[in-house]
Length: 451
Image (tube, rainbow, N blue to C red; front, side, top):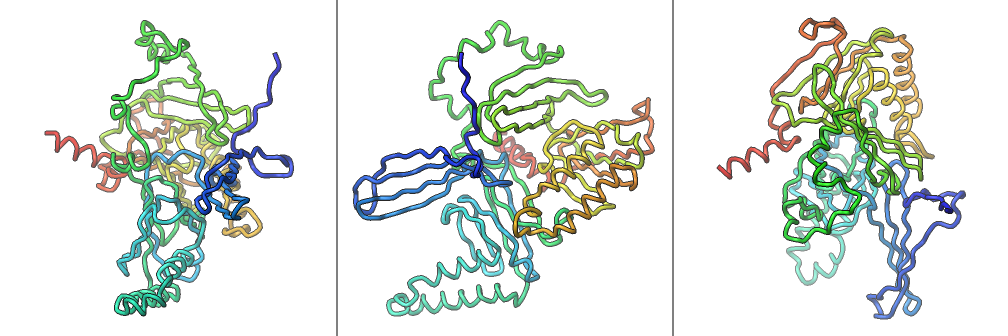
């Protein structure tokens, strides 16, 4: 049998791939109603996402149209950004907007609804400039036909110009149910002093707007018969027990990086003095991408948990750490704060967690390229401090805060009830905002309505 070299579906544009796979489709021209050609190119923007480039051209009338569409999956949760614009550097912050991003400026009661503009990569000042350009269109004709409306629009445009001049601080709010928008942090990797990000669980209506439906909502459509290679019903009830008995299950998935077919290995394991967790590892033969994920085997705990781990010597590096996707990390001595989904869920050690943080910061998109948005010297100095910690030249405290309570840090004490000098554990009641991020407020509302 001959084997065909497997290539990623979404590939980088480079000199090593001089002939990218372009798909040509005969399409209807909306200008002259003749047939033109639509060309599709699947590629990826480094450190951002996979995209589909579409280019239409009509040889008869010369009409052309170019579009870009996301080629990846939606994020698991929606996202809200709130930026306080106080300094000129805030106007130069890079902003990534998707089609589903809604823009608001509360001080002017101004809003750009979602799906009213195409996704783009711009700046904070660029958002205001685009709003001014849009409102200025047809103003000359409007002044003749509707002078009062034109006067009010001129007054509003003047207010937008004041925002660009920073006459007074103002607020920019972004909300994206797809989770695919972003505001640059010039102070990275330190905490952003004027910008906050909040993840939220989508409602059923928002999922439907994205074309996402639950299994119960699509039951009315007949499902195709299962393939013969699936586990038979007689052994399905024992599949959970099979996972417990040190068996590694393998199933076919798509690579999260290039979307090529890949294998995912899954194993259920028990962490002493904690709970069962599911460890999943995916290796892509096409692009070489590797990913490791850890999912909790149980639901959300009644209380959140906060761990303070002291790392001062080599023995502290061997402490096992289970970090869930909802767990944020902080190192006060280095003024470092990392969100829960930045490093993802992983089962590692204190050394592995610090090493993964240094590796991710070294590959940060804002620190690379011809015009990096972050200071190369500042980032290099920060990574050097992290390396000093890994070389036991600097002692730090790792603070892990998980509102879902699904994270765990190993105690060096033989008796789990006895305190560990290098570990402090605090359990706390979640706030309303934390419950909203976990989707618990929606569940309580549904239970109340059903009762």
